[in-house]
Length: 527
Image (cartoon, rainbow, N blue to C red; front, side, top):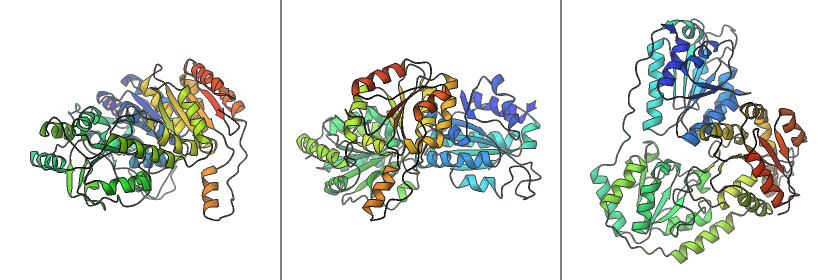
């Protein structure tokens, strides 16, 4: 028997965890006793918020759960923001936290890191939160979290363990069990949907991030049945944007409303159909809506699906392919799709002057680059106009919309994908300062990570919004540091390209470096 803190690390390793992000403290130090023995790599963040975003980026890039170790009280509250982002974007992040001794829990005795209810705070942003009061209950909570990641909509979980329990001797965890199978559509549901597809003249497929594991069968389905495709931002690349049946990134606003309203069948797979994708609360469909999702709650939401089906996207697409004839005929023409795709992209270019910079970036980056972006205008436009040829190439903090996401998430993504994979952070000057301290982590790890910093010296999105709403701009300009000097002070490389040729060289050099590189671009950059 070993202290429970040791057995937790052993249990995680036995369940496939290879990396943990976190910060040790007096309360959670027992979690650190067994990390090395368990063969797990620990990555030291500079803030629990950074650790949470790193775990998020690691999970998105690898497809495996991201794990963080955090302390009682402020460690947990600091991590709530990235946990909230993971919740809104369906990312499997497991937080393991210390909490006060069992005798002091929720007693308000003024202990160090005391909170009214640490568990209650966590429950506002995670799918599962619980307290391990001994070894068996702790391991059960961990296994419930991992089973939920594997089978349900993969939202974050928090397991807290009292300090005295972490240090107490415990038996080792039981062996890991195979995750339960994901739900599959019934034969009757598949037969119904197949008949709807065969009868439709203008069937439209809406694909979200929950369909990324089904790229192969979905591409077969789209091509064989001549289905038109409208991806959400998270679903871009499942069907390549240059596919003749793809409407590309015209999901936001009026273009998609007219498109969806003209369809005589809508099949939405793995998408929340949320406001942050469509720019409106309602979908605007008049036709039958087939809704395929792992989240039973989504199947009963305001969109009122006529055919709600709880199923895994991959199995559903595979089953539907088998149930349909080899070819289908619809009234969607490739010329109409091309025209509408172009109209959607033109409408999306709402930030004057940014598209030439985006085009220069696209030309300078490898096509296989994985990009983690922040809440900044250059990312808002780029994630619309940058063609996606494969899924999992662009990750953005949708839904919760956190500033400071790009750098730590890119660190986590880089750890997951390795040195040979080009990973890029794209941030704005204001959001970058939320988590810039994580440069130190990237330097310690020797990551060949280019960090593209768009520095327009203001909160430009907020300034524009104020102007649009006839509010005199206020509190939208802040004095920035010398970012080049700051990056170098951390031990990173830094440059400020003036031309597209300079930018290409800077990125090429950064991808071959042994330390991260800050690449600052300003509105003076003229492609």
